Length: 114
Length: 113
Image 1 (tube, rainbow over the protein chains, first blue to last red):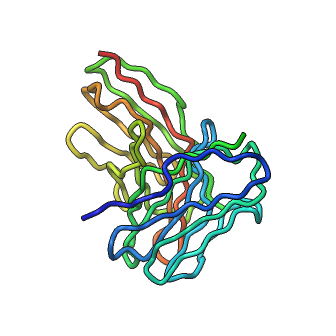
Image 2: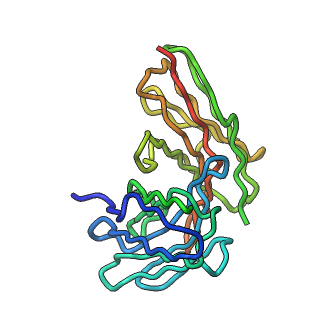
């Protein structure tokens, strides 16, 4: 069974640009969550999507947005990039309906903002 | 919202020694506590979890303990091996409904051969 796939794995942008990251969940998983990982901040929750609907959102500015498609694939977008947006962005999928909701993470997209 | 504090942020142990990572949480509604291990260049992976109706759980060399009254939970790794070197995250979640997982800041464990 294929795992969670994130693309691109690495990217470099400059301040003011925008970026779109993609996540393909494990087949059958309908829930997709996004996290920002930075040294010293751990895993910060961005948002979660289920059946194309955002059902949870973290404390990030409106420059961070996401969406989910009918095939459960998800994208997140960051507009007007700032230096502080440099981070590893992790996507996790889970099998909706389980009580605990184990998260299966991809390897992440490492964004560097210059 | 939930707040999970984790310490230490870094931990170095000799191979064969034990390692302990401690976490506290704030939301009394949290009743599920997973631990994730992140190896270099990879995403975190669930290694063990515990629910609030259980005080301790073991899986070979790793164990978790939970004190729900004090809102503390800990990860114990015995007989550490070099492959245990990784970043470990504790987390808390309320089960049921659309509850998000809140992670601690992570502990970088280094096992010295």
